[in-house]
Picture 1 (cartoon, helix red, strand yellow):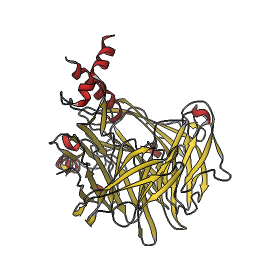
Picture 2 (picture 1 turned 120 degrees about the vertical axis):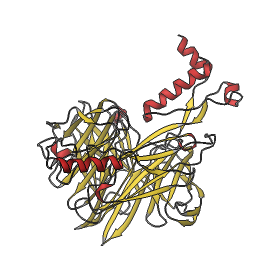
Picture 3 (picture 1 turned 30 degrees about the vertical axis):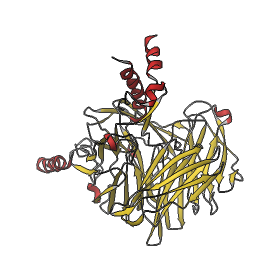
Picture 4 (picture 1 turned 90 degrees about the vertical axis):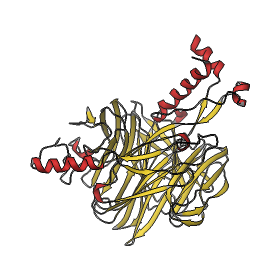
Length: 519
């Protein structure tokens, strides 16, 4: 095995540990990076994404979107396909699972009809990209819209992004629900879930592999870990989706719960769907890994209520310093200068109309960064019986590039914050799904501020489009995108943080990497 091969294995292994799986190709033997011995930054050549089942409502209308930006140096060939998962464990209307796990409720003929329907949809292509730089969409109605499992390689792999956006007209969880499809992993934290009687919260587990995954679900409330009955050893069948209703895992009803998903065997994608009887619902993505410094970007400026939920996995208590990155700089919210979080216990704090009509992002800091924390906020818009909710977890920074999908000329807000230093970003609006010419603008973000920027729109736009954010200088930069509309006087909205797409990988210098392996 030559030196280049060894170095590429090391680089790909490091990336795979983060994204689930990935691959890169060897650089051109005559490239400048190889001649000088400098590390090469190469496009990822294979990656995967998982999308949870969108809804159990017959009134749901879902749009799936897939996109890959144009990446310099990417392979000239490739594919990006999202397929329907097998859904062996999708819930029926009565709350049981289709495989009879919670009891048989129909005749053998009825069960056979269900199995035939599953076989007819499982593995079918739902979305396939035709070219980088142009998003594609597919639509599905009702409760039969499937979870998706997909892979991309070659020219589509670097920066591949997918999103599902669902509108539910009425009932529990009515409103706009959006979630970016994510890579498989082995551990997830979800502060902000609930087992309260007014909430219907599912943890959606999606297995992309050909072998079963085994998952443990831990729940933590205001007094510590909740006693669960069936939270251990949950099996997620190959290439299938398993929605688990959190209130069935414990007898304790608590308003604010932190969910910890640990995969014993295999890997899964995970997201919480939080549905409320009165204030609609949305997806709660996983928080960034436990850290002594967290950023929750892009709280809508017209938020009428903000509730922060935080949890520290260890035994140590922590007094979190709270600051709001506003358009004019970092400020300390009056009355909420510090928040006390007890070790191993979920803490919740009502911050009111925190943003007061201006763009804002929360910056949480533990003293000396010594105690790791996970956090998320639940945001309400509207008043009285016409409120809608969404969630913003602590986010990872946009180190190089990130993309938000399903944007429209009206109702899209791109929010960017640079809490630690001045930054410059480039924002590209892609071609539209049905037509339009890409547009690009650059922006300067001052240190400690959050800006709702006037993002570019494709010229002659038809359909929806992608917004790609690239960090050009300074930072770190954090971003989120809000989609909003008004239906029947209710302000429907959904917020998605923009994590780095991890579309590029630094391949170590061949000679240096070999010397490490030879020790």
